[in-house]
Image (cartoon, rainbow, N blue to C red):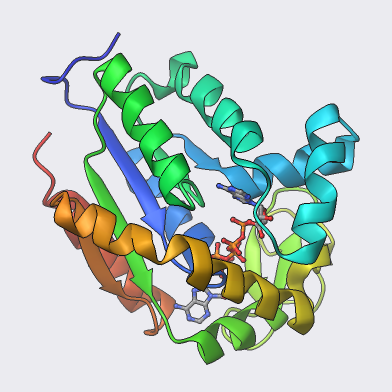
Length: 225
Ligand code: AP5
């Protein structure tokens, strides 16, 4: 098991819907090779497969609410114990409230694997709506695009694998606004929580993807493991 003196990098990506967490996760994973753990993706897969977790989660996700903490905390606690996490991990979309942050703090303390850094992608709410309504994802490899800001070379087709692009069920404007309200009510307080713990690095997420990636990778390269 990893200890306090190991050289693993353990990162948390924090930010509102559409902040670019998934997009920047790709850049970090490309450079660091650590596993990308997106609770949103895990839950969407569970819904698609009709598992017990998926059946519990679906109505919350459709409404733009948070899935109950016990469900999500159990998923993450198990995932962090998987062998591929021994050299670090990147959490995207977790924690999302203080209960989850405290559960993560407890789990990482028990495992001796503290968080190295929390990257907070700060964007304006109107940017979130604009980005999410234009988001398209590959049904086969999961790659993300945007119809205006990061368009695929051929409309509706993934540049990376040729798969078909689709829009997420919860990406309607109405649900995005509900997700933003949930973020304001429950997640925003994590910014101060991690700032006061000395872990937070704020990134100007409103810039173009390359500039955001530059800021993110500079911050990550500065971590002393
Ligand atoms: P989740 O999947 O985590 O969604 P989210 O946090 O709302 O974030 P998004 O995936 O929408 O956005 P993103 O920040 O990854 O942005 P992206 O890079 O794709 O959660 C979905 C649901 O699952 C939740 O509502 C909840 O119900 C449930 N859930 C998940 N985790 C949970 C938890 N811990 N507890 C309880 N419930 C949980 O970018 C967006 C678009 O913008 C893309 O099209 C992209 O191409 C484009 N883009 C990205 N960066 C830029 C840029 N710099 N400039 C221009 N365009 C850009």
